[in-house]
Image (cartoon, rainbow, N blue to C red):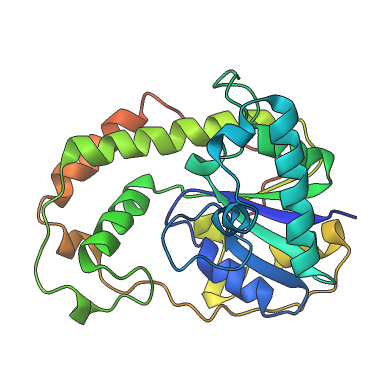
Length: 266
């Protein structure tokens, strides 16, 4: 049986709602984003672990040192979670937090390799519509509200820099391709698109069955997230929507979306 469920995704891919929904079943201890840096830090974040153990960056200089810290951190998470299954959310751009000083950029992330060896199951979530994904983050930052955004929360249109969001879209696609390449041959990879994650407002039932079978835990046949999708229409909010949408679409043509075998769909 897998010892962890690890969600891999970019920002604005529906992970917070999924974490909360799975945590509500009583089968998982939801650690959320373990490499989150903004206070308040949830119980089990790597930042809290470092504070509690007075760890410094120099303590991860070598592979031997990093291995010990990473192993101790996973034991720390399991101890907090028991008897539940640790649920970890690791964003595309935070995989290299736990690593020794020396290492190739395109080598499998040190912490991912350790999780694989320690029996983790990986749930990879992507968005087919990267335009919506990137603009969703910009709108949330502008409103300073990440979830439950209503029409009244947006007082005026916002202008977004095309080059900024086009580069962000490129980084998302390149990161997805790289991390999928690391896990492609693993038997512990599950994949689903955000657009297929919440049919009719419920967690995809096929995903629930797959998680149940893969993790050896009993899950309900239906599960409704408590966090609602943001309501405002992005085309109405972003003053230069057509401009930024074209910039993102144009750059993504250079980075085709990789297919994943046995992906869960509607």
